[in-house]
Amino acid sequence: MTRTDRDLMTDQTKEAVLSQEKFDEMAKELEHLKTVRRTEIAKNLEYARSLGDLSENAEYQEARELQAATEERIRKLEDVLKRATITTDNKKKNEVGFGSKVSIKHGGSDEEHEYMIVGSEEADMRERKLSHVSPLGAALMGKKKGDVFTFETPSGKQTYTIEKVA
Image 1 (tube, rainbow, N blue to C red):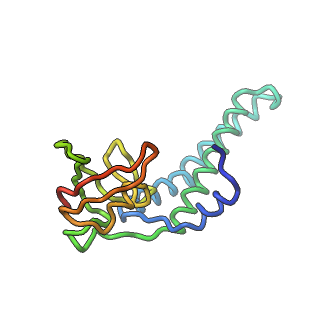
Image 2: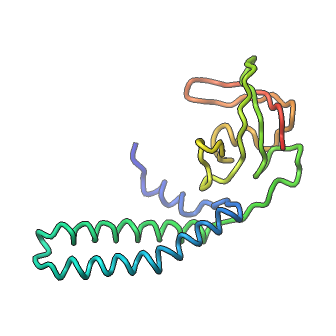
Image 3: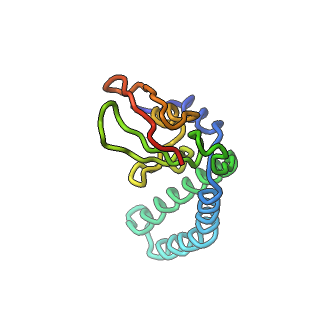
């Protein structure tokens, strides 16, 4: 599936919800890329140019590709930080919101799954961090312990019970 220009424009106008920690992490990465990394790349390009014919110079081509990737990452970080809204931990501890840790059970299963609700830029399933705009995350928002909820997945409707909200 390819992304259309409209999809990209929509992404660029969406609010980026971040924790203060993630905002600071991204700002630090941006500063590093703009100062240290750009300087390193410029030195690599200068050295590669000194080797002669640029059309057949693999080191030069590699340095240019690295420069392009770095500049793209800088643009992405600048965009996200510009659109960022900093969230604070959920004030209503008994209700699912940003920063909540939620334990849920699927249907009649005894197996609990715990997730932390975060903004989409922080989502990472390996760390059990669930985006508030994902199907499951959106279905959880505003719910309380004991609530039973259903949401749509590619394999059909799924029903879960909220066991714990912290």
